[in-house]
Length: 168
Image (cartoon, rainbow, N blue to C red; front, top):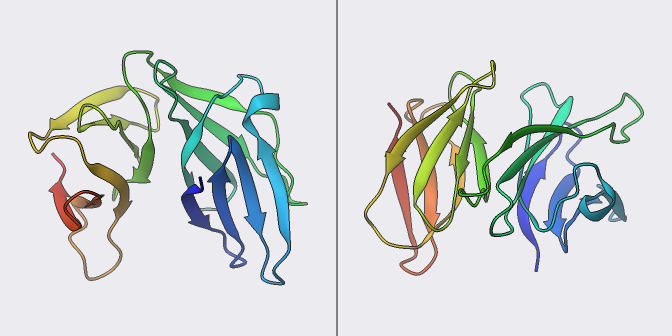
């Protein structure tokens, strides 16, 4: 089913569905933006997506168990995707959802471990935290103005709660 959702600066809705990234325009037109099965590197199950702060790139996680990929898709001025760049891969981490921290480093969340990894602008990775709450944190996002800028927020599907996760 559909998962992973992001809004661009023109209020188009992008969402992950069936290993593709779809674009729903303001006029209600549904378009294929990116096909993970046709990209290089090949993806198996696009889950989390997030735009860069300048909207020039779209980041996507491959949530397929054993893949552990995070890619960056440049967006050309005409709105079409450019060549994919592999930013991170670890077959032992099941990358699923992503968000930016206050310094615009990417935070990756894997579903099985409830652990978070920070990928810096220099591409160095840092293991941040492990939560002993069991399986359940699904999507993550950074809080906007008025929210704690040192935290990300995650939804817990089975319990219907939102966690505030303070990052080191």
